[in-house]
Image (cartoon, rainbow, N blue to C red; front, side, top):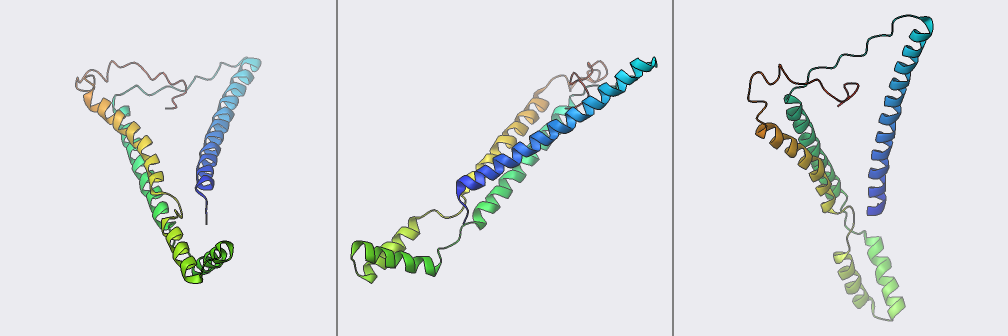
Length: 175
């Protein structure tokens, strides 16, 4: 039905398309911001104030950890479901053709050829392997690392840590 390489290629291409679209949209917003500032400078109008960044909080790590962990679990469940449902038994037509092909090629009786064909089809891997669901362990591991860092961080336990925390250094507030 579908080859494993084709399925992997589809996932890689989908991820690549998402990354390219996000980068293109980010570039467009930065370009509009630049054009707005240049137009203000040319007209002699004060330059618009840059977006103010939200103060940094250690709860960001909790949010990131929950998002990454939930995404990893969702990916694992989705891929496991796809792998389980893609396993289909061989059709009677393919078994009959294999039997005929083996009997013609090797000159054995139809019964012997049928036994060989059934044994081959029993050992043949059809559909997506179940191990593809383990790809979800990557974002799950990242999420668990964020959660471990959040719960092990001493700065979140002191009440004045959030009040004196430095602003975010992500540039435009994108995390």
